Structure formats: structure tokens, C-alpha cells
Length: 206
Image (cartoon, rainbow, N blue to C red; front, side, top):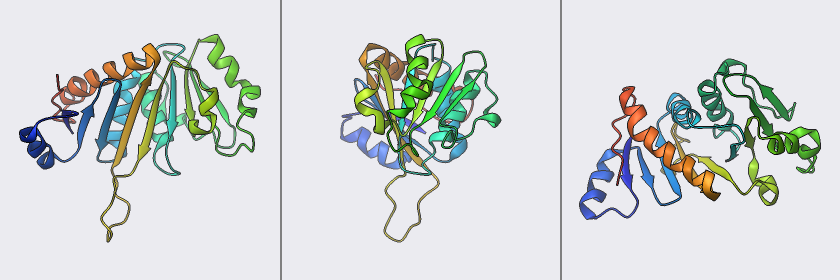
């Protein structure tokens, strides 16, 4: 994984073209390419170390993109066994207890996504005692808290002859002051933490 800043000069563009997976950073956003599920979880774990009670992570992306895999990486950083984290598609709302409590919600099968508020999501957000992760958050877009981190997970655009690749592209946008703080903390963690762990040759931009 290589880190570059958005708007780099021609010389940096040439280096980026050779680098393969990379991280790009703007003022309030971040784009990260990961090679596989293990890197996806590692990237989530890097973010998870900076989360605090009351933080909200709004996950979007197509079916199978890796939203629950990402949540497992967050969970591990929060002291929750990632092996017990499953998609809340049927239970709709899961609560896990670790170093920090984790509230994991999913709107995919709800006819009316607003029902999730009645099932306890509103309490999770209002009490600010847990980290809240919402899958298919785009279905609640108008009701989400203004202070949050939006993370969209997609596949890289494949060549016409290729099947969907194993890698993923993560796009994160910080909403409000806390969301922007999380983007900056995540950038620092990806630029330093993953490289220190031997998973990436990351070079944080200015």
C-alpha cells in the first residue's frame, strides 16, 4: 500500500502509477486500496484504535463488498473477538462488549429503514456509550448523526475480460469535526501503523 496526497505533481503521478495500491488524502477525505480481506481488516483495525464511545461509522457499498469484514477489523481493535461478529442482516442490531462496546446495525432487509430506530439504534446513538457501525447506511442518510465517518467500500474497476478482483477500494469522508479528526487519525495510522507491522510500505503525504 502506498500513500500519496491528492493533487500531486507529474513526478508523483508517475510514481503512483507504478505503486499499485495506494492511499490518497484530501482535506476531509481518504481513499485507500487494499489487496484482500486481510488488508481490509487491518485497515479497519488501524481506524478502530482511535475510536471512542459515541463515534459513528456509516458503511456503504454493494452486497459482498466487505462491510461486515471491515466491521470485524474494527471489532478486533475494540477488544471484541472478530469471530463472533456476523452480519446483522437478520437480527438487525447486534451488541458486542470489549474494551469499548460496539453496536452493529444493518438496514438491508428493512422495508422501512426508520424501523431500526425503534429497535434500539436511536438509543445507541443518543447514549453515546458505544461505537456505532451501520451497514447500508445510505438508506438512513437523512437521519444519520452529523458527526460521523462515512466509509464506502467498492471493487476496483476491472478490465472488461476480468472477474471482480479480490481487492477493494475504501473511500472515507469525515462529517463534522469528529469525522474529520477520525480521517486524520486514520491517515496517520495507515502511514505509520501498517508499515510498522510490515504490512505496507506507506508514505504519508504532507
